[in-house]
Image 1 (cartoon, rainbow, N blue to C red):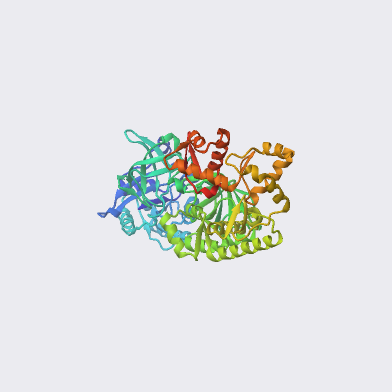
Image 2 (image 1 turned 60 degrees about the vertical axis):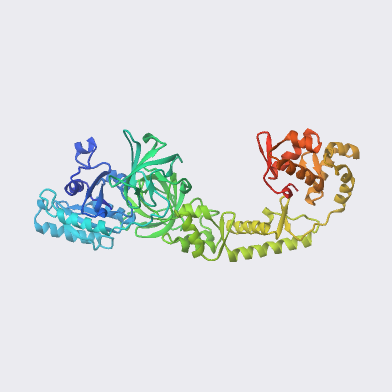
Amino acid sequence: MIVTLAGHVDHGKTSLVHALTGVDTDTLAEEKRRGLTIDLGFAYANLGDAKASRVGFVDVPGHHRFVHNMVAGIASRQFAMLVIAVDDGVMPQSREHLQILSLLGLSRGIVVLNKIDRVPPARVEEVRRDVGALTAGTFLQTAPTLPVSCTTGTGVAEVRNHIALAARADRAAGATEPFRLPVDRAFTVRGSGTVVTGTVLAGSARTDDRLVLADTGTAVRVRGVRVQNQDADAATPGDRAAINLVGVSAEEVTRGDWLLPAESREPATRICIELAVLADFPRALKHNHPVHIYHASSHAQARILLIDEAPMPGGVAARVDVATTSPMHVKIGDRVVLRDHDLATTLGGGRVVAIGEPQGRRRAPGRLRLLASVQPDDAPASACAALERGPLHADTFRRQWNLAPERMAALLGEAIEVVEIDGHWLAKAALDAAEANLREHLTRHHQQQPESSGLSEAALCLGDPAEATTLRLALHHLATTGTVRVEGGDYALASHQADIPNNVKRLFALVERPLDSIQPPSLGDIAKRLKRPFPAFEREMRALPAFGLAIRVSDTRYYLPARLLEMADQAAGLAAQGPFTVRNFRDATGVGRNVVIEVLEHFDRTGFTRRSGDTRTIVGNRNAIL
């Protein structure tokens, strides 16, 4: 278990950690000279016999100038220890730190009344009452309030016992999710190399795991793991971990970077959050309000983009977009803290409900309904709600919710009946409706324009982004099942046979004989033979493939389908003996080299053959060439 200390500057957080662990967490020369904590400090201790009683302490700065460092040391699964010196009482950072702890989702903790040796008992009771008012309505409302003196040792044992009990009851969840660790330190250890530290938010990391640094995508390998300052087999959620990495130098890693699997990486500069503005924030938020956004150990400047047009006063909650100046590595359900750019005070915070640029207008009714349906704690329910409005890209959903592949498979069973097409989830009812729409559209088109070979995807898949995607997926599904065929980029019902216009019939009657060869002449030669102007003749010839009368293998050469299939069979015969060359194919067919190259390049483009250096192999179906 990890304990995060919080409280106003000079209220004795560092002294309390020393009393509990014997470790001085102020390690910087500047910290010792000034007598205050500037950066995060860490200490570890065994507070009981059980392995679960190994506890890490994160000592955060209390000065308001270092709130950014304070936020970097907090994770939602940590145990909070709010420290208040009774000689000062409740102070500004006592209040702000408690607000930040609440905004970041901490749910357990204690309050320590420190320096009781400096005041009479009546003052301790007065501060206790003030603390009751401070914590009312927060997660510390019913938490124990323990009086302590680090100077005399009074109460230290009771604090230690409370923490040990909490550690034994600590049960972290999320170990089956993909690994996530926000980096708060990076340094070099002689003989080991680069080490990064942070509190594990999800998943587990073990020796030899392959991960990436989220900021750059740099691939790394885990060389070793330490948890709570001890060697360990794995780092799991809630652990204070030090990960020894191979593949990157310490100078290439900065606080705010993340360690995670490559497939989970999705940097974003636009997110939507469920923002709760603090009741005591003195201004109403307007559109484009400048802020600092804090997410685990990372920080960026940003602007709040209101979705509701009215300004947001203190004490109000609403879903807003946040545009950041640099990429962040958030997942849906993560918590962020916002601080006002001008006032240098905490404005509020909230949970992430959407990631990435919105499709279409930000305030479109469909988007507002979708945002309103997101439940950050419930991926299955959110998937169901989203599928009622349109397709979900499965990999994007997995990345944005930080779900493991096996969890994705379970989601399919929990959601409404779905079909997976081209990497998307689509509600079966929506698929059926879209397919019926497409069949009706194509039937009407075939009746009205019987000579047409079909309609393009763009002409069939119209509507808002969700509708268009649904129709596109349904069209591909119809093509896969054989209900619809596609030729030359046009889609038609499989049963449709386009009426060939008379002018095309006349043209084909003229060119069929010269094309009936395994080495047909070029368009230029045919045009000369027919005494036709080449530019006009070349344009007329482009109508033949639309009706399946001829296949265009190059800009200047056409084949009859049957003759081209003969060439494909000869290629297949060569490939049965191994990879073949242009020369092998030329010798087998008796066709000139230039024509052979045109044919083979057509085979490559259509996926029938694959070229590797000077040789080719068969990789597809011969009918793909038509």
